Image (cartoon, helix red, strand yellow):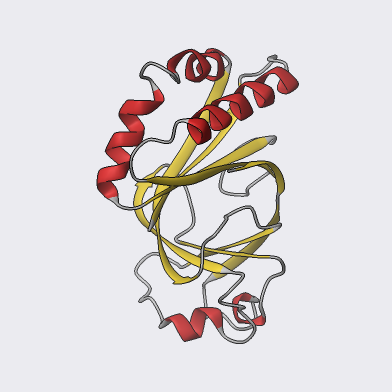
Length: 191
């Protein structure tokens, strides 16, 4: 499974409630008429991720079976049935960044977890084994670990979604130079 992840926010001066409602309507539209290969999506208030300038960011997660489904989603998002809702969001879109992540461990019934632990390694550092990243405490039935596959803007390499951060991603457990950042998120839509 892969996930297309988009951080986005409304343009300066736009009504945040109008933007958020438009984004939620778009997700609901996709849930009613899912493109082939799409397993679900989520819209969350992400706050202020430190790798993005400014505040008031949202996260869109689109869960997909494979890279082919990413192409189908790309076409379907602006096709009949979804285009007008997509365009409502696009008219007041103020900026974004994203990436494509691959599920590498755990289950993923939903990405609408209250905590996201973003882990970044320094340039040129070798990636440790998953055990070194996760350590103790990851509930593999309730949590999921994702690794970035494609860069579409600034974003950390790993993301662990869980109800609470396991000990293995604490700064004391990570290799030298690695950084973890815990972001609380608020679910707007999970479908």
